[in-house]
Amino acid sequence: MELNDEIIINAPKERVYAALNDPEVLRRCIPGCEELIKHSDTELEAKVVLKVGPVKAKFSGDVQLDTTGAPDAFSLTGQGNGGPAGHAKGGADVTLTADGPDKTILRYEAKAEIGGKLAQLGSRLIQSTAKKLAAKFFKSFAEVVDEDIPA
Image 1 (cartoon, rainbow, N blue to C red):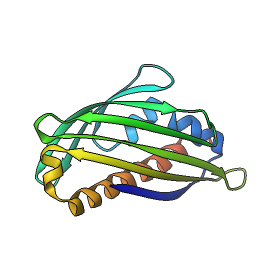
Image 2 (cartoon, rainbow, N blue to C red):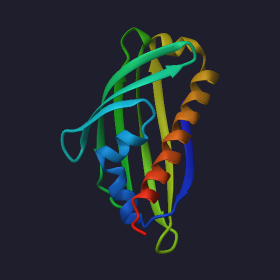
Image 3 (cartoon, rainbow, N blue to C red):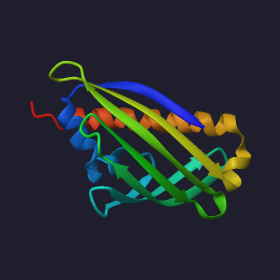
């Protein structure tokens, strides 16, 4: 499964990059996120509860960040296990482009593979759920970054 999109965030690129590396901001924005622990600048651990069609599962997973292109670009890879519901692994490439002093264009391309009961639900349901979750994350993220800008 592949996803890609771009959104405009009303904040300078440096603020957007900092927020994408802030575990508290991410925890607030990731749908179903119960816990997000930063082990290092490149390692995170997450616990997320998701419902995909009739399957609800609690996923535990690890995420690795590659920040060699920062603050213009970075990538992440991760994998999660949802017990009997299945497992998922994937990654994303994110680029940030300044669009004036107070706007940033965030583009992402993501790929994911799933297995277990989740994989049996059908690719259309999985794809539409993944798109909804990504849209919800980025909408929340844009709102949180916008909130944090002092008036």
